[in-house]
Image (tube, rainbow, N blue to C red):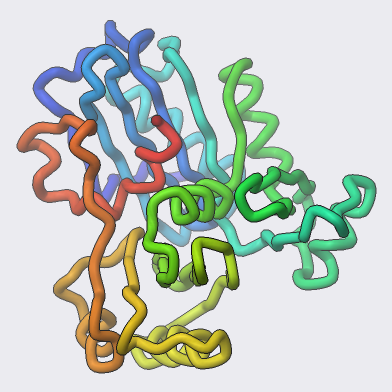
Length: 282
């Protein structure tokens, strides 16, 4: 396939490919896109970010080869890392209460909600604070290529990380959204407990706002008294935020923790864009 250019590519002055053994790397794979972040474990400083998005990234092979070319351009493709975390970022996931979960039936849980694409297999992760399991599907070919390259890679799903972070750090009654290009995850907490989780596809700002307000109404919360926190691929100066702001009084965005160090090279990249990566790097 034709080599692609990243739409975000930042490296700090401290980046040094020869120091890769002290770097943690978090990779996020989605249909049509991939991204990765590098954190220097000795300084807790972000040293690299790269994001790709294209309709050409339509297969596991396309995604993996693009990642390899991106790493090669930085002298990292054949280097070792302190750790590598790979996150599958797709809609093919569902939460199952712990008392109902049966590992042997994980395919059935997903097939009840989705038509799982050919070549995908299922796995699961326990979300302790919510007493449930996140069952998800991912492309086996991509998984196998990643594991062959990094033997000790940690694999997981974006939504598990997102839900765990929400449960650990957001107000007891609140709404949290993680936004992608054409869909978003939504979590509602009530009294510190996971009350609602779902994913919504959208094409317009009106779609986005409708799904947000509909889910709020169905779950007995309003924009008058419940804060909404955004993360993911969205900026404060956007039409979606302007429209949502007509109905939600308290809108804010996840903020970079004080423990994360970065330099001016990353000032142009909003922290919400790589918030999930950082959670995977902690």
